[in-house]
Length: 390
Image 1 (cartoon, rainbow, N blue to C red):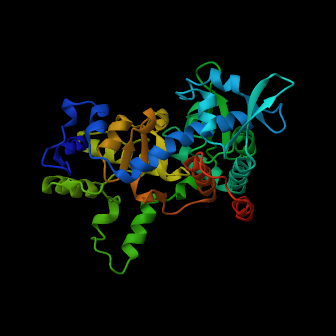
Image 2: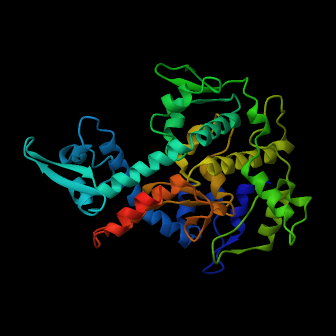
Image 3: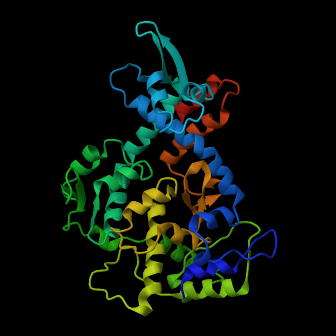
């Protein structure tokens, strides 16, 4: 059974209409027509402006010639289209006075923009949180490489998700170069490309436990465990958008899929033969890899386009977007902000991570400033609290 066909069995919460089977519609059409989860949509509605703020913040902080770091409004205006600033840079900056301070430089006869003190403090806290967790950063990279069939990944793919993985912006030097016993950079098959390889002598990956495996252990150890311990061996946690009604046929197929054996994300594919009976197992392995990838990210979310860069490395023959759409009980995809962003459903509750981390906490503070918009100035007590929370 092709699991993608299960979409035809999802019943819309507002009526009895049946969602169109993927064979007669495109993924983009399906995303637009499916039942939406209001909690994730509301969260992504906040994030779409945060991502623009972060892009400008990075440009400011990356300017080494100014003290404090700043960029000209003219420079940002030239990048307005690329940064998706529909009404121009100046208009966007004025929306967030608690993050950006615009000033006029009489020596250069033009306006500039820098971060406010509180925004700089939040940026510093995030950098400190990342620096304090470098051992976890190394572990994430090793796990990422371990899921690759060749135990190697193009460096440009890592650059796509460096922020999602909580890597420092100088990770080539601070992480890769400083751990030569773990990582190695080699020339790629194309000019000016590099491949990040896992040093084969490192055997730590052999003992890796995937996030879903930890969940299974916790579920089985509960006194009121309602699942059959033999059935949960290959299961994943599922939950669905509020109001989504599922047909009996759909539930039955999910139950059968849950029992299906497969290779875990850290198990080698080398020497494994593909067969018709193993096609579903390969798809379930692809789901396991996607699940683990999202579990490794700081916010348990990533743009679909970014994770697609790892598809060949992980040996996934399926369309990544379709993979997420086929499993709405595990993943939620939003199209807010003209991008497809996928969330690991089980990691969130009421729009927040259930198990936050210091890097995530710092980023949430910046999101709070974005939501504050032009509202009243932040009190001095809040500035003090930011420093005390380090």
